[in-house]
View 1: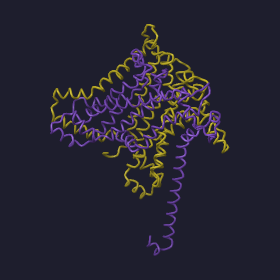
View 2: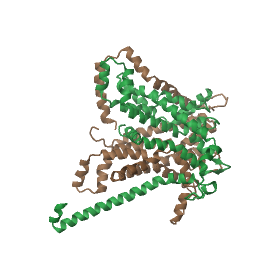
View 3: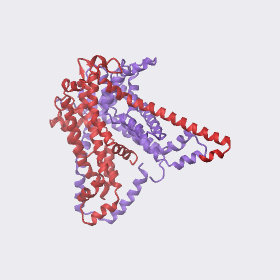
View 4: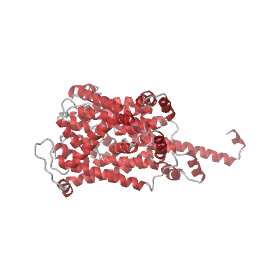
Length: 293
Length: 326
């Protein structure tokens, strides 16, 4: 830069031009990036402002609540069985996450760190089960669960998660494969059995992957609509929020948009809080899923 | 994605298994570790898949005490002979696979590409772009129904700039495009994959391209795109599989866009434009309890997804480029 003074005029002008072009392209990029950001924020903002409107205002396309109807957030607890739905959702998401982790970690360990004949085939079977549409399995399962008397309870949602989840097994296996064998070999020389190696070597190292898989399992259950619709859709005690939101906020054949939006905000709040505190885990989990697949 | 590492792992494992003799006690340990999955596989996968196949050849009606009769291919014939509902559902589903999935992928690439061009504030932008992917689908669908209602906020904004907005979810011509809009909003997961892939492309390739005189567009076409082709493949494949099974968005949009209909009557609203293959299975199987017929539909879906996946994987070998040993 300091040497520029000594350079001929046209060289300096070219450098200036290049700098101007660089600045312009940065400005253009940011302009596009901001426009895209606004598109991504708009639906959330509209959801938020609508949740603060009165019933009269909510359907009118107004862009700002006047007056602010903060009571919507307490109304959802009075006007609809929101607390019950919320509790059921917490139970479903919490217990099924525990189930997925308890059952999938040992399977992934066997697929990644133990050598046995048929391992590759078993792994292919795990992958293949992910391709089966839920509609194929849900018809007979519905029959079985209703014969067991489980329909209209949370059992059909929670209990299957204790029998391994293909997606979680796959993710965990990918991660377990990356653990250097020196670590487990050392434990083996010390005479540790597989169960102890898993508990005292593999699981402690794999905490980030296990956290990511746990988060995904929790999110899946929290967001799940199809299974709760089938098994608890007509239930007066076991309905979850995903289903409750679509049916309960309709008052007298008129959409109570403001209540639906207030309920939606409460529904997605825990997810957003999780996301902000565990952003790295999420992003790593997502990239782990795709790129290493 | 699978080629490189899988082969080397297999080699190492072959060496390992030659070294260690599998003994019987170890087999039991392996079985113990696998037992949750094996039981789950039998109960929640193998049994239902076979049962659905069997049902599909019967007139079984879950819940009724009618005797179950073997009807051969009648359910399948009924499906194909249907002139109304079935083919409408097929057409709408194919529309989504052919139109929504490619648009979604192009948009995800575009958004990721913007992020690679940004130095300052990249983390803030990335968080904002990824955020919608975290919102539960039901909440997303409900928000879009509020935002896109015919007299709603978006049409309000559009009229401010002199555009008369469409009826969105209450207009049969606009209901599927409205779902596409929603899919663009929730593109975060795929976008992150593309971003990671783009950042993985070696800098030296860009430098070489620049020396050859390639501009930004040419660099994107000849360096970035081949570099991320495995992710394009992954995104199109998973998007396709997901869209064949598209359910929640359509069910909620149909059910909530019209407050007068109960959610049971509203499947496909407006005018069957949001009648998809899976919503039709749901209606046949869980509202009319025509379990046999719904099973035939479900099995056909399974076969179609399977066939498309195989064809797609085979076809991809021509355009997916796996760089070296990753």
